[in-house]
Amino acid sequence: MKFLLLALLASAPTTSAAKDLAAVLEGGAATMGVAVPSLENTPAPKSKPRAAAVRRFPLVQTPSCTSAVGMPVEFIPVRKTQLDAMGIILAVAHPSLLVAQVAFDRDTFARHPQEFQLQVLLHECAHKNLGHIRDAEEYEDEADCQAAKRLQTEFGYGRKEFDMVAESTRQVLTAERVEEVAITAKLKALTACFQP
Image 1 (tube, rainbow, N blue to C red):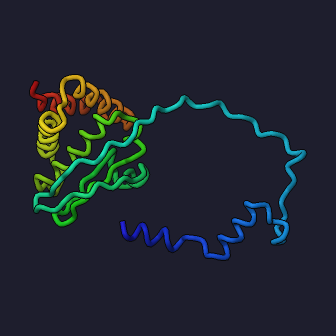
Image 2 (image 1 turned 60 degrees about the vertical axis):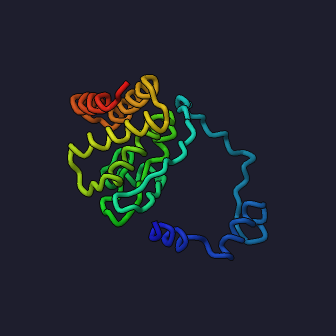
Image 3 (image 1 turned 45 degrees about the vertical axis):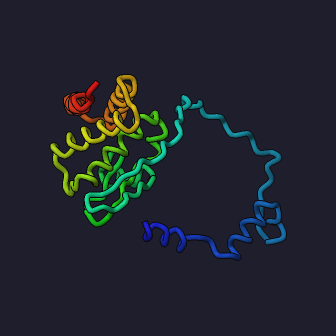
């Protein structure tokens, strides 16, 4: 994260460049010797068909989470492209026990109900809490079940909320072109963790 911030700071415009840009935006381009084309005889751009509006949900408040070594876990919202570069679909817990961080795709989160968002964050929290340091299928089921227990005991989730979680899980995995057999197995394992 520090490297990302340093890169952003390094690419920030200089003070004079920022002033020049502000002058252009405020209409002072002529005084700077910048030619600004006239828009009087410019035809209006053709409008593109509007895409269907995507429903946006507020981001859920991040839950409390402690790593296996007792460190508080930090949840970091990132862009989908950053996770895509790592081959991650939605969220990832840092694989080191010494780094208590979980990164999640804030854009995809905002397209799904908070019930689903919370389940994903608690699932990744469970990886940190249980000390999972490598990918393994049994770890996924274990993290799902710990998340389900917390959803029921701490957040009062019932059948309605778990159905919302299952539907959003299916939508995300389908959009990522995960095979149907894997989606069905994931949903079956998730449902098995729910104790009505």
